[in-house]
Image 1 (cartoon, rainbow, N blue to C red):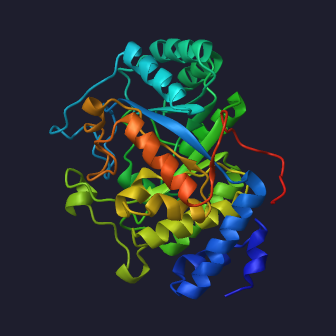
Image 2: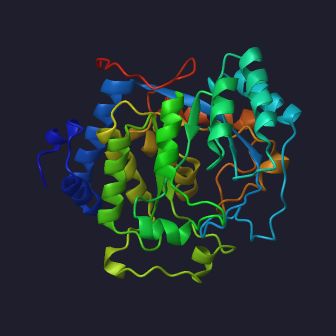
Length: 361
């Protein structure tokens, strides 16, 4: 293993990244956690920014092999929130002290572009919030319209940079070929803050492939980086084992809590200034301390759920999601306590990417 001090430079090589992904020695990994935490502190400080998540629809036209929202899932009770409900959730997020709302949905063309643009305009006119969108692979004209309406950020995880594996788990629509990196480039050109990310432990994913994913974070210079574990959903081909990618089991990336922390830490090191969440999926794997450990190993964002409870239980990408029955107010109180417990502070304002280096205390 190379000198950990070299990791403070984002020019860590892919070979070194892969070596850390394979590392199992606890003492060595403590060096990784310390390096990531130091890079985080030096570049984005001790503030943890809260983003209010609003899951506005669980309809989706896609057939992704891992996602419970896939169009073939006939057991899912579908919903779309009304404009009034979405705006009410945004007001609640502001009242709870959040600086950003994140509107998320399946790739749902029942969400008309102008309808969402009007909601964005209303939120921007009424509240001092940043607006992040996660709407899938929408047409360029939709992305332009939403940007003109005032949307600030767009999150589109590419899931894996392995094209063969991506095509297997994320089939193209009949009328278009999926190219998420081209969309991410276009989003950047429109002036969005751009977020990408991956799924960890996809059946068929190797450590070399995951190391390449982390290198893609750096090449794309993402403003936001989200990652989470593959959690089997028995209503999907990957969850049932119906779909089995061809890879030697010894080279399979495990969808473990430990591997998730490695990816968060390495993402922080290659993209020092990015906003990186400690995700709900981490809290699902470890309900006691998952979020805190993510924040201690490079993350600086959490995303409390502001979706009304009657809808939240229906947004089931994967089963057993943490905090599924907590109200927005309960979630805010819980997260605040967790943040303060690790001597961090709650961020103020919209919490956009910091592009100038700040000094550690």
